[in-house]
Amino acid sequence: MSGVRLLAFVAVFDAIAVFILFPHLDVFAIGYLALSTALAVLQALVNRHFSRSRELLRLFYAKDIDPVWDKSVGILGPSEFAVLFEYAHWRLLPLLVNPAIQMLGLIVCLAGTLWLLWVDRYLVGNFAAHHRNGTLMVSGPYRFVRHPRYLGLLATRLALPLIFGSIVAWVLALVWFFLIRRRARLEERFLAGRFGELYSQYTIRTISVI
View 1 (cartoon, rainbow, N blue to C red):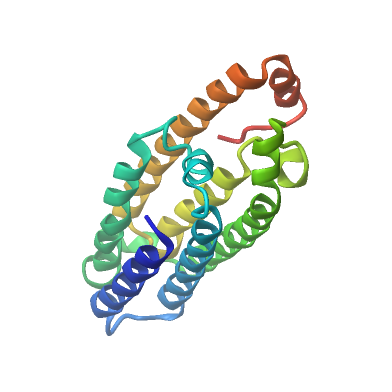
View 2 (cartoon, rainbow, N blue to C red; view 1 turned 60 degrees about the vertical axis):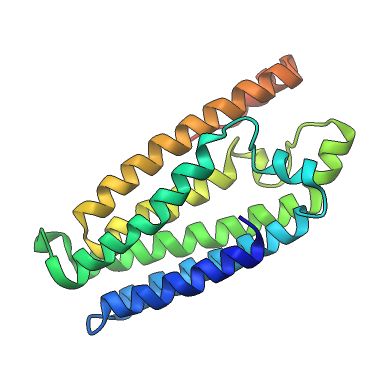
């Protein structure tokens, strides 16, 4: 999805979300919408940067490694409307809606967002050079985690059920977990084939967390 289309989608998503949540638009819902919008803006900026090269864009988003990803995300994104509707109107399991847990969810979402900001800043500044030189990224956030971008994404997806106390959100979070885990495994297989022993050594001194 291009940066402009992504921002347009988020604008429409936010408008529908506010309509669904009203009059139950509380601080937790507003906080989540604000953070998800910030993430979308960040993603749009990253898209704009890498869209200068079609080859680089496809490689950055691993489109040839995992063609299922885009279709799955296209379904999971709009599915969040069901989470918002459950929170504002159904409350299938009211015990899940707890202010302390909701605040924890916002903290997790904020941490994931700030982490993604660091990761994407690193990638914007270094990804093209590493691809051009055929070298493995082992600095920045990649010193610690093999899939830092997926770690941040997973944090924001796990924050959703915590913030909204939603059974639907827990189901979506589980789907996201397996989708991200599958994608990470595919990328590891690709990188192992490309860098061989160098990548094997890299995996020994870093963690996957997925």
